[in-house]
Image 1 (cartoon, helix red, strand yellow):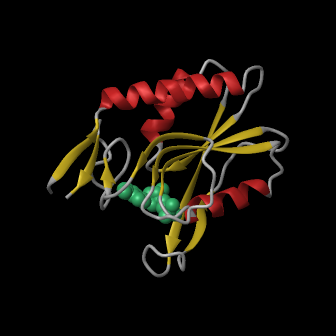
Image 2 (tube, rainbow, N blue to C red; image 1 turned 30 degrees about the vertical axis):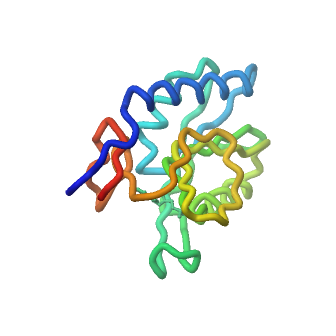
Length: 170
Ligand code: IMP
């Protein structure tokens, strides 16, 4: 598989640190629930959470999409729900990569039903090739124009998640 280095682990670390600093400031004195979207988010969430200097809860959801390929005709359902209560609590949804935003839209709807105090979005990568993304991302690591990205949790056919850097497949 031919791959090109996109973002090095050093650059990721620096950016994750910046995001954590901003989140720690914004949530000072509060205890947000970080909800990670499995599986791609594992390394990002682990690194981000350890850079925060506020107390947080950590939980996970897993979403499966099925239907016609990568278009908005896909359906999304949760195959794993959160286990902690988020009622009345501030929630930060942590996602690896937002492409069409379909996955995130569905997850937000499911979380909103549980009565959180607020829901904000933190994504490592926002893809810019889809122009009609309507989801505002509150904390965004990198905005990337094109290509299929692997590494730092992101997979191609379940492989390459353990690469420390981010690559684009060629
Ligand atoms: P969306 O629903 O179109 O926003 O797709 C989001 C999900 O698709 C992500 O959580 C990833 O699992 C997957 N995905 C989208 N683009 C990429 C990519 O470039 N590399 C790896 N996974 C991707």
